[in-house]
Length: 108
Length: 113
Image (cartoon, rainbow over the protein chains, first blue to last red):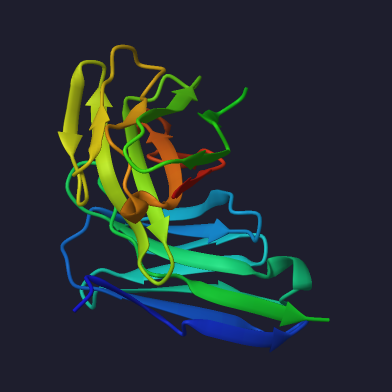
């Protein structure tokens, strides 16, 4: 069983829809990262959180440490949000474990 | 501010050849790491370093070597390339002094034939 499970694996939405991507993990963590990987391959950090909720523009990330679960929400989705979203719990020190990613496609 | 710079971006190797993937960061980050990304498997940690002179193995270290002689540079060496090392490689850096936000290089596409 993978230490990090993301769902769904693939998601297609219409522009303007509210998107939720879920991440469950089985290891003890000090923080959790959400990453975005665009079709060209580059990976950027969206959030790092260790409790509660963070918001950046149309993106919201939440985490429940007790339930070992995090969610990434995108409000008013746009075609430019099309990318792979990766959940990465941070374990000992600065080591990360990665989910396989969620491929999001937003159609106009 | 260049961030994390990886070279080369694309490389084709023959089985048995050796090569070095270069990684440099200009943010004075202590922590640097190398990952490989394969279809359906997510990113996997190859080697990492918590500071100059200190390196350690990650999840998939076999066939790879690293060194960290300076804070800025963290090269990854393939000792004798094998087709199983065909992958996309990413270098990353972070620092607790900057909130542990992780910065990735643009990736290196390696094919071993």
